[in-house]
Length: 291
Image 1 (tube, rainbow, N blue to C red):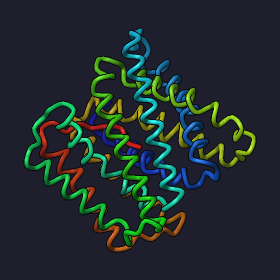
Image 2: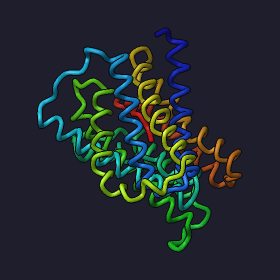
Image 3: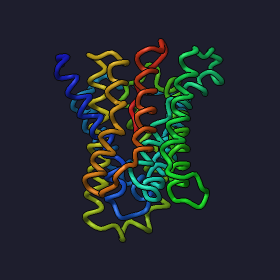
Image 4: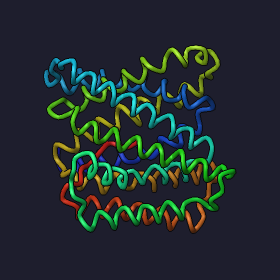
């Protein structure tokens, strides 16, 4: 893959990641069903991709590694559930921006779990994210749907940070597509018993949105991310993926008339700036597939 094609691939991946909240709102079913269906379709897409592209690179994994990947799948499923719940409560913009602050959690958790000293610039990043989140919510009241949605989105970001840190240990030396496949399979297996009774109530249109979410926004976007990393530096992909909230909010603005306030735009700009800052200037910054 040439550099030009890799840049196009990662930009397309960022757009697909940004569509996650939009499709979650379009699907008129429960967050549990959306998460389960997304995982099922992602398993199909990743299996096909593994057969076509990653043939021969996947190796048998020891039981300990499989258990770690399964734990990562459980955390990833919880991240999706809380994110889609935030979308349903407060809309795409607040949910996407609330989740986008996950790099701050990652920096803090890395310093605690891996005993890595924080660089002064990392404190700046955490401060910018916190300030951005404070600006995102129109008014901080516990009874407000916007506040509740933001809190669920922040929890979603925390869970995704845990997934990222666990992947740092569990996916080392493992084919990325194989790791994603195992994690999505875990989500599907865990949630299918709870979603079984809801299956007959899901409309054909909702299955279409969930299918797009699983195949394109999960399977294809992850595959594009993996393919682009073979050509581009992780920092480059991180900066491009930071545009995910921009794409998501813009599409939601057009489709649902969710017009963000100036305060939300300012908060979002601070969060995105913090992500770019951490990707460009902090030595240990790593790109990670998003929502």
